[in-house]
Image (cartoon, rainbow, N blue to C red; front, top):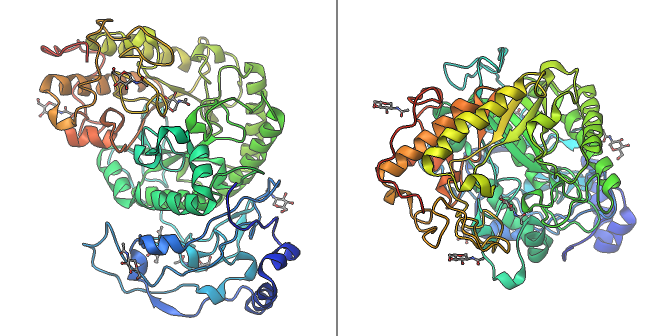
Length: 586
Ligand SMILES: *[C@@H]1O[C@H](CO)[C@@H](O)[C@H](O)[C@H]1NC(C)=O
Ligand SMILES: *[C@@H]1O[C@H](CO)[C@@H](O)[C@H](O)[C@H]1NC(C)=O
Ligand SMILES: *[C@@H]1O[C@H](CO)[C@@H](O)[C@H](O)[C@H]1NC(C)=O
Ligand SMILES: *[C@@H]1O[C@H](CO)[C@@H](O)[C@H](O)[C@H]1NC(C)=O
Ligand SMILES: *[C@@H]1O[C@H](CO)[C@@H](O)[C@H](O)[C@H]1NC(C)=O
Ligand SMILES: *[C@@H]1O[C@H](CO)[C@@H](O)[C@H](O)[C@H]1NC(C)=O
Ligand SMILES: CC(=O)N[C@H]1CO[C@H](CO)[C@@H](O)[C@@H]1O
């Protein structure tokens, strides 16, 4: 897709020559001469402690292009038509109160970048944001993935909070010291309901997911738009706030185009990779352990928008299903080789194979793929516990499956009461008691190999009591609550009639009644308590633009989340408090 230069592969000088004519010959010669020259210019890194979030600079960046028909990540397969260094401009949107630091450091400039890497996503002189990135070029790759941007040393001595061990100390038992954590959803794998501003187009354009968004923008503008999002949506301050909220882990969803793309893909290749790596460094700085979550695999594992492309499942099953299954194994080979490096041993505590595979994928085929993936990932030496999804068929379905891995394999279930017409209709009290009985019961049963798989975690949950949040069912979709979701005409709310309305869900947090906040806090504490019957929980998600019941941050600011996650007043062992005169129809 798109409109920029196509280079078929690294070393394809014929093709480069066609595009750039004699210039490339000069660059190639210069590249050989320069070789792996280490930059010598000492520059003021005061500028590098800032985000260079300047739109005109961003606009001068040109796009990444996907290599045609290759599944390898190859340096030089993407081209920038120009490489405007961003190191000179220092416009900061969020660090303006910091005093500048004047530590000397060596940053590469354009002349230091070997020709094969010039203008690629590995070329730091083209990056939009240099905050905390190492600005010295390196051609070093691990698992065919670049380490450029990373520092050579790291410090694993931090503790996220006094109740959990420092990164360089063993966690111990997750059954007795559960995970309390959040997802960083909508950052590297876009979701319209998390960032509706990125999907604000006329509905006739059909922009409903990252695929259609990138196809519409074209490769150049997609790269500019998405890099700006990567650089601004989550910042270091979020990691500081997450640790301060008593949370110990983050689950970071990312998509396969962080490492590779295939013929015809419109996705932005490679740019999210370095922001993912920086995110891990920020997590480390606050003692937070990371759960890497491959949220989108080639072909789409569930046909939902958050797999990149909404539509059919073409992974294991569907068109090119077996090719895409193999591609996803190849991707795991690369990624797990990378994350087996010593620098990740203490911080990447969990390694997720694939988010929410669709229920139409036969379980035996999914289990076979999972066993192959585990063999690759553990064979490459990843230290973290591997995660597989219950794949929307219920925890009991995995009793007796994928046994023999001990505590090095954990099953992941996502618990929501609002996507099921049988549960969304529960009143507020019933939603709380249902979590405490049924969801806690499911998690407990799953922890026991006589009744379930064994080690069990809850990788997603939220405080939503309706499906009213804008686009939570997809761009342009109606809601079950009001009775206009996907051809339905029955309103699924406790009163089940024309009273059912999204009015309250659409209000700002500042207008929430104290009874509603009591419900929301209790609903959150009920879920935390229920899921701590297993290995613990990851809330979905840390931050949203406009959906407060899906934002841990909004809950903290709004006073309907416990200020620190490990210190709570209510648990499932207590009776459900009164929610006063809280209405049940909105
Ligand atoms: C970005 O930099 C350009 C050139 O230095 C300047 O003209 C422009 O005002 C800056 N834009 C912002 C948003 O700071
Ligand atoms: C890398 O090192 C530089 C220089 O010491 C520092 O400013 C920067 O914050 C470090 N980056 C990370 C992610 O730790
Ligand atoms: C890296 O790429 C080369 C060719 O580009 C390939 O032969 C090799 O298998 C790849 N290694 C990994 C770990 O993907
Ligand atoms: C920055 O990266 C270069 C190349 O990988 C490396 O030699 C250097 O030590 C790194 N700087 C820091 C501060 O880690
Ligand atoms: C669904 O119904 C609500 C309330 O009547 C309305 O605001 C919304 O536009 C409808 N959405 C669709 C997709 O029909
Ligand atoms: C627990 O209750 C006390 C006393 O009512 C209150 O001050 C505190 O904020 C509550 N803590 C949480 C986490 O709700
Ligand atoms: C059509 C579609 O894929 N809808 C999904 C989009 O993603 C949201 C969550 O972000 C899901 O709830 C929808 O089912």
